[in-house]
Length: 178
Image: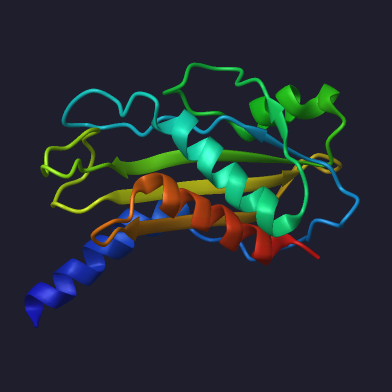
């Protein structure tokens, strides 16, 4: 029982910086939405998960676009692939792109296991594929974060991170679309 309590408190403490924000606004059918390439996941035990931001952005975008029935406007990332993007930087990057909203994300878990069981990208642990993402939807009109997604998935036998990120994109689109 004590171990369970310690585990629950540890999980709560780890999740605190990534609190979900209730949806404060929904994306109207005519709205234009931009997306900045997501930040590569950091790995305190080794190198960053190089390329995980590019892969997650592509997969998330596909799921979001298919579900929301709109095309996201790709916006150049204003900082390095492994650097955090502040809301202010995201808004500045999106300002001249003619969008109403911008999606900004951070990959916080990316583990793709090859059939042999050898890790392709290392983050986390265990022997299953993992995908974790924090996304903020910012409304440019008032520079306000109107929705967030903080989700982690662990794949079963044939799931791969890209499929999990695609599902996250579709789930988030259902949440924020009118």
